[in-house]
Length: 86
Image (cartoon, rainbow, N blue to C red; front, top):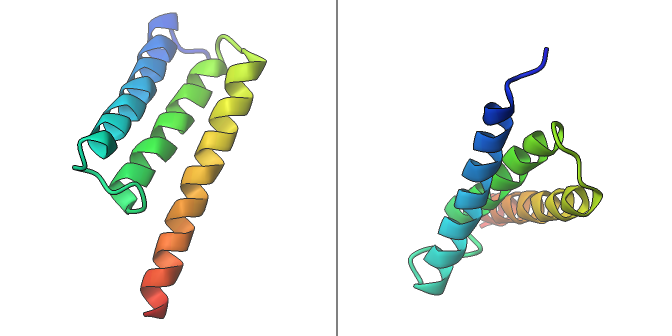
């Protein structure tokens, strides 16, 4: 099943907006880059952009978003492992 072009565009834009909001929040010290809100914004943003790439593939963007998402997922796992330990 294929979605209309505008759905892929909207998902990519929402993902990009999440990146920008997370980055701005960290710069003004409203978001801690090591805590779940910022990490989730980055992970969900990467996933949404990856979904948008399913429609209009770009290798460079795919590699970047995959790595970005993996780093965010690693940060989340590390956060919860540390929280459960202590």
